[in-house]
Image 1 (cartoon, rainbow, N blue to C red):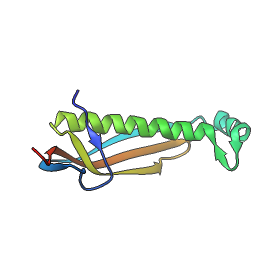
Image 2 (image 1 turned 90 degrees about the vertical axis):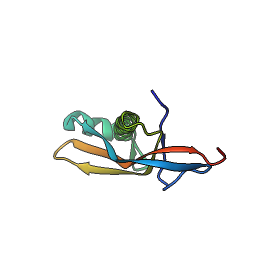
Image 3 (image 1 turned 135 degrees about the horizontal axis):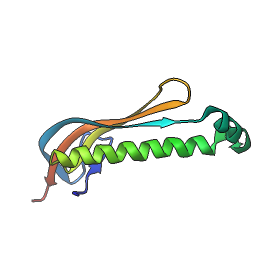
Image 4 (image 1 turned 180 degrees about the horizontal axis):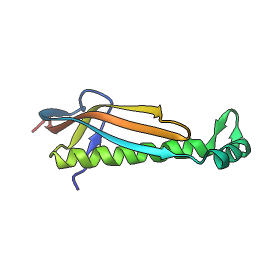
Length: 111
């Protein structure tokens, strides 16, 4: 698979956009078992942070990134610009993670 660069900026230093392939997104839905997660959260909250929830959110981000990279590669893109994450609670114990941006083809500016 082609390596896909993902950035929150509207361009890539040293590379110029040669083609726009479209707006794309990667998503993940993270389920949480409320009872066990509350118990784990009580045990694992340190300084107002819950390690178990942070790990679940990180897993969701990783899955969304993988989805975005795969969609970009299918379109022939080597980068995604303007990427942004969005998180939303989807009912009790469910979290939706979305990463969207614009798939582009690029080339080195010095070519």
